Length: 103
Image 1: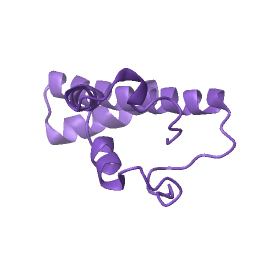
Image 2: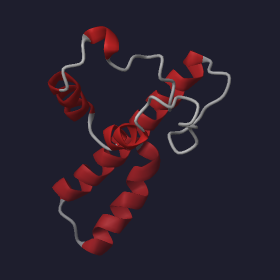
Image 3: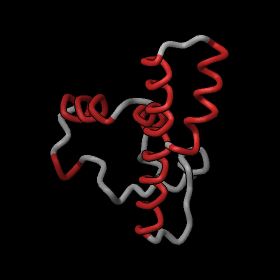
């Protein structure tokens, strides 16, 4: 947070932002950095042999997997995904698990 506050303060003065707006922007950036660091740390701890994004994943390897559904679920928040999985009638052991190593 310390690294970005000075540049944000200068930008806030130029844009004539209120203190609350300035603070909101700094905290927003801080949150993004923390989430990124958290994700990167978890990926490192997982020791995956390689990392694939959803765009790189080969859906032909798993023909039963619905590519359109997976891509749609990726755009939702975790609470929305949970609600959809709950409403879909999937039993607990049929739901996607941590075995889906897509970062």
